[in-house]
Length: 258
Length: 338
Image 1 (cartoon, each protein chain N blue to C red):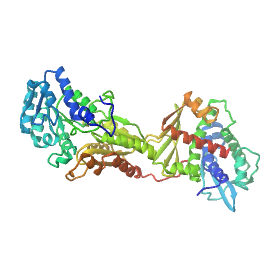
Image 2: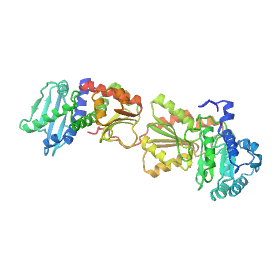
Image 3: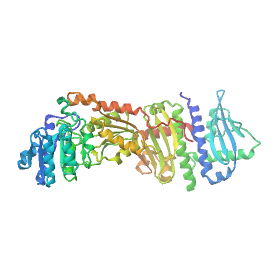
C-alpha cells in the first residue's frame, strides 16, 4: 500500500536511520565507552492517526539493537505528537519531544548524546578526523541501502514499478580497501537490505567507492555522480542505466528525509 | 568474407561461409603447409566438402567407398605411420556405424586422427532418423582421449580445424549440413580448444550453448535486454571435452541461473556435461537443459525443427522467461538486515 510522503519519511527514519545508531555505538570509542555495561530499552513513539509508530532502541550490556515490535515496558521513551514533528526533529529542527522516564536521567543524557552523534549524517556535517570520516561513510552506506529497501516497502509508486519488473538482482555498494559494504537485493517487487558483500552471485550493479576520500564527496553531494565517475572517485560495474536509477532514488530519499 | 552475419544469409554466403565449406578450404590451406596431412572419406567427398582437398591434393586423398568401419581403420593405420589423417563423413556414421573403430582403433591408441563429422544433430532434418545425429556427442565424449568440438559457425570451424592440427590425440569436430548462418565476423576472437568464449556479458542468467544455438542465443540475449531489461550472459562452449569447468562455475557463482542449449539429445551432451560440473561443485542454481528430448527427432526442415524444440531465438526467449521465474535460493526472508 502506498504511504503518504510524510509517513514514508517517518518509516525510513525509523527503519533505516535508527539501526545505524548501532554503528556509532560499536565504532566510535567515546560512544562505546559511554554505553559500556548499559542494559535498557528506549522507546521512540510517534502518534499517528490514533495509532502509534515507532521503534525501541535496546541496549544489552552496551550492545545496541533496534526492536520495532515495541514490546515490554521501556525505561525511557521519547514521544512525538505527529509524524511531522518526528521528521522535523530528526532533520535537526527545534522540536521537543515528550520524554518519560526521568528516573533514569543518566540514560536520557546518554541517549540525547547518541542522537546528537547522529548529526554526523547531516549534509553539512564535515568531519575532519579520518576516523569520523570513515564512520560517516559507513553510516551513510548502511542507511542508504536500508532506506532504498524501505522506500520500496513503503510503496513509492515509481520505485514499486522499478523493482516490480526486476528478477533477482543485487545492487552492491562498497568502499575499496575498507570493510564497508552493503547491498540491496531486489526481486519482483520485493527488496531486502543487507550488510557486507553479497557472496552468492555477482552483483547486477556494483558501486565501488575509491576509498573513504572517494566516497565522502560523492555521498555528501559535493560531486555529481557522473563527474565522480570521470574523476574515478567511484566505479560502477554492471548496468549504467540501473545504477543511474538507483542514484536517482537515493536523491529522492535524501530530499524526503532531510 | 561476406559481411552478412546474423539470422539471414544468401546463397552466396551459404556457399562461401558455412561450416563444411569453410572446413574444405581451411583443410586445403593446411595441406599446403603440412605434407603429413591426408584426407579420407567414405563416398561423401562432395557432401562433407573434403572433396576440395581431394581436388587440390589427389595423391593425399582417399575415398574408401561406402565402408565407414574400414574408413576409420585405414585412418588409424595412416596415423600410426606418422600421417595426420582428416576423416570426413556424416556424424551419424562416424559415431554409430564406425563406433567400435573410432573407439578401439583410434581412441584406445590415442592416435592423431581428426574426425570432421558433418550433418550433425538435426541439420539434415529432412533425411530422417537414419541420418540425424542426435546422440553422437554423448558417444564421442565417453571415449577416453577424445576431444569433442562443436563450432558455432563457419568462422569458428576454421579456427577449430586449424587448432586441431597441432592438438595431440583424436579430435571430433561436429559441424552442420552446410547451410548454417554465421555469427562471427572475424577469426580473431581468442578461440582456444577447451576454453569457452563469452559472447555477451550478463548477470541475470547464463545461456551455455554450442553449435548453431550460439547465434540464436546471442540474438535472444539482445531481444531480452531490449524487451525485458534482462542482463543475459551467453557462453559459446564450443569444446564439450575437455570442458571449461572454470568458466561454467564462474557463471553459476555469478548468475545462479543456467540454461544449456544444444542440437543434441539432452542425455549425455553439453547439458549433461555442464550438469555434472554443477552437481560435483555442490553449488546451487536454477538449471535447465534444452535440446532434443528422449525420442527420435521429428522429420522436417532444420529451421522448423529448431523452432519446435525451442532451439531458435523465440524458443530460447521463452525458456529464459520461464527459468527467470524460478528461485535459485530458498531465502525468502525479506526483512532488512539491521
